[in-house]
Amino acid sequence: MCRHAAWLGPPRPLSSLIGDPEHGLLHQAYAPRLQRYGTVNADGFGMGWYADGRAEPVRYRRSVPIWADANLPGLAEVARSGCLLAAVRSATVGMPIEESATAPFTDGRWLLSHNGRVERDALLSLPAGPGPAPGSPCDSAWLAAAVFARLRAGTPVAEAVARVVTETARADPEARLNLLVCGGSEIVATAWGDTLFSHIHEGVLLASEPLDGRPGWRAVDDRTLVVASPDGVSVTRI
Image 1: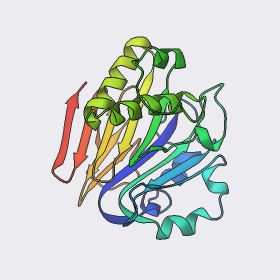
Image 2: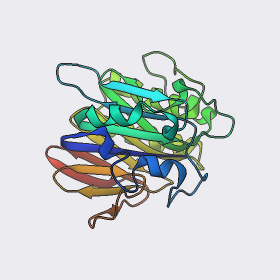
Image 3: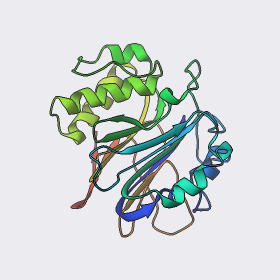
Image 4: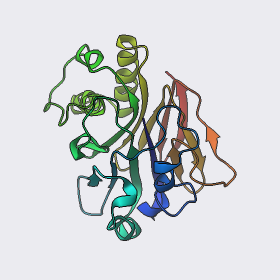
């Protein structure tokens, strides 16, 4: 399992997800409060953000524990965007610990993080789509490739994510499929088998567990799709 978080709203630094809050992802890496599977998230970390004048997001990821990267605090303070994604990883048993297996995964303007696990054979049963093969043998990379294939085929992002999650769950009923998918001006998230919380204030913050003690954090129901855009936030059952 993993812990992840995303922001959509006025530009803010990546440190607002990682080290600034008392229970940001840096703290969740070694002391998560609500993690149901695994005890620490020390198998890598990654971040993605959108820079003015650049069509594709910027990505930074490592296969070391987040607290072991001495360059991260400075980078996280100056990397600012109105759409941010960050994750810390607890690798599924048998999956490699390497940068290519670490979220966020990217394709064009899209960033994707997966908190959960799934049998790769279940993903093989999904309809094939255009595009390159997954960049890693890990389950999350294969899941990301399935979503990206549908996006390249023109499927709207909310529909693409919902389809992949429901089709994968039919093939692997024990799968845990919490996704965060960012496109720069929208975030689509799923709660499927693990915790997800939202906080709406000046923008939309989605996270595996609350990043701080402010009032306003709300648990997202399981088997739910969240769509956040400048037009607002919608929550639907899937």
